[in-house]
Structure formats: structure tokens, C-alpha cells
Amino acid sequence: MYAITIPEPGGPEALVWEQVPDPVPGPGEVLVEVVAGAVNRADIMQRQGFYDPPPGASPYPGLECSGRITALGPGVTGWAVGDEVCALLAGGGYAQQVAVPVGQLLPVPKGLDVKQAAALPEVVCTVWSNVFMVAHLRPGETLLVHGGSSGIGTMAIQLAKAVGAKVAVTAGTREKLDHCAELGADILINYREQDFVTELKEATDGAGADVILDIMGAKYLDRNVQALAVNGRLAIIGLQGGAKGELNMRALLGKRAAISATSLRARPLEEKAAIVAAVREHVWPLIADGHVRPVVDRELPMSEAADAHRVVEESGHVGKVLLVAP
Image 1 (cartoon, rainbow, N blue to C red):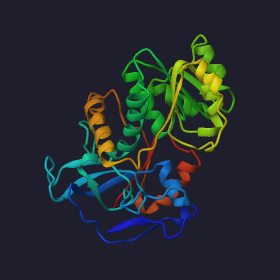
Image 2: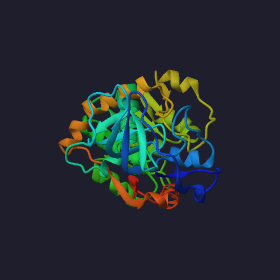
Image 3: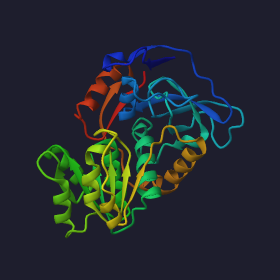
Image 4: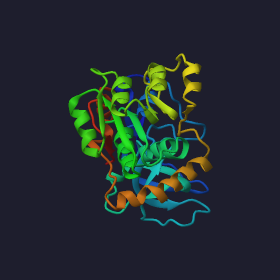
């Protein structure tokens, strides 16, 4: 098969489309012929040499894909050759084939084609596990999403609105904020021109956000704590603004607030399987009913993954950038 390899870390040009050995499904795995994958920030970090795959994972980038099952490994039940699926991966999505643990498989939701489904697994599992399973967002509460026009952001807006929450977002352009509004965002904050703490407090009568989904890390840490409501929960899932910050513990104590920081890729298989099962139970019906949909910015051939990385690094997209396998 062909896959995107990274012979040496570097810029987008470090991504090489070349022939590699076919994967073989092990016990409890299936082989998926990939129709499409999607670009995530973690892929860019791996290309740069900052985020190696966990032990035993595919060395190729790609944390999600969609396609069709072509073979079953030993002990697999409940799935059949020919099933259309999408999958959460620890790596290997930038390839024509990938071996997937059965606990990380999802059927293609009703109403979507198999290619569109590639935009779902990583963002849905990330949002559901952090916003709902860890931070316990409830109906009537306010969620602040940083990077509202990203793949994560566009999904977080829709899921929060689907459960009856109010949503605030930050984004860097009017056009991106307009896209967020179309998805249901209630409070729109241009982080280049406005202070999100001030704007959020004004929009919530001084209360702040009950839950904040943060991709920035250190750069926003102090202001995120300021923006939290009493009993608020800050969920950190990215470090685009740095890894080391100063935390005002007095402010945190005064708000009886909590901070969580999670990643998905290196979790044990059983934890990933539990998240995937929760997503199938709670989110897949929302997609089938049309209440939630993947937001796809563009599709590029998988062999042109370098161009897709440039788009994402320049933040020139809304939603997901897909890589279509030949």
C-alpha cells in the first residue's frame, strides 16, 4: 500500500507519499481500506518531531479515518467484511489501509456518506470525553470554546447546543465568527480585537463560563480562570499557547473551580473503547437526526497532505480538512 511517511521531522515538505508494507490485523483488530482521513493538530506536531506515536501504534500520521472493513483479525465478532466504518486511531490514518482495534470502530452514521464520516471520530471523541464525561456540561450552563471555527470548535458548538447549553466562542475573524453563529453559537468574541474575559462577563451578567474548552494552554491559563463561573470547570486539550504558565490558586479556590488536562491518543485501549461506546450511544443519534453534522472545509488527495498541513497551520480553514485516499 501507499502511506504518508515522515523520514525526517520538518515542515510540510517532510511528508512523503510512498509504498510501505501492508498492515496485518492482530487479535481484536480489523483491517480497514481507507476512503478518507482528516488532519489534526497532533499530526502537525508529529511531523515536526514533537509528538511520537505511542508504543505499538502505526508510525504514520493520522488519528481518524473512514472506510470499509476488508479483513477480520482473530477473535473479532460483531463486524463483517464490507461494513462501512469510521475509526479513532493512535496513528496510521494517512494510508490506504490501517489496522484498527474493534473498540475504536464506529459505523458510518445514517445520513452521511463514508467519506464525510472521516471528519468525526477524533473531534467527537475529544469533545464528548472532555466537555461531557469530564467537565459534565449540563443544560442551561454556558460553554466557552476557544477556536470555535476549528474542527473541535465546530463540533463542540453543536453538541453543547444539542443538550441545551449556551455557547460562547472565540475566533480571529468576522467570517469565522459568522460560521460559528450559523452553528448556534450565542456569544461571539473576536480574540484579536476583544478581551474574552470582559466580553464573556458582560454577556453572562458577570457569571462567566461554567465550562471552558481550551486549546491554548499557558497563554490563556490566567484569563481562563478569571472567565470561569463559580464551580466552573476548565478542560485543557491543547498547548498552542505554550506548556508552562502561572496559576493563581487563590482565584481558583475562590471559585471552587476545577482544571482538567487530557489527551486521547495514548490512552489505554479500554478507555478509548469506553469513550467510543459513549459517543455511539449519545452522539450518533444526534447525527442521524440531523441535529449535528461534520463541518468539512475542503478535501485534498492524501498524496497532497503537505498542502493540507499548510492550510491547517495557517488557520485558513473552518471545520475539518479531509485527505482522500486513491
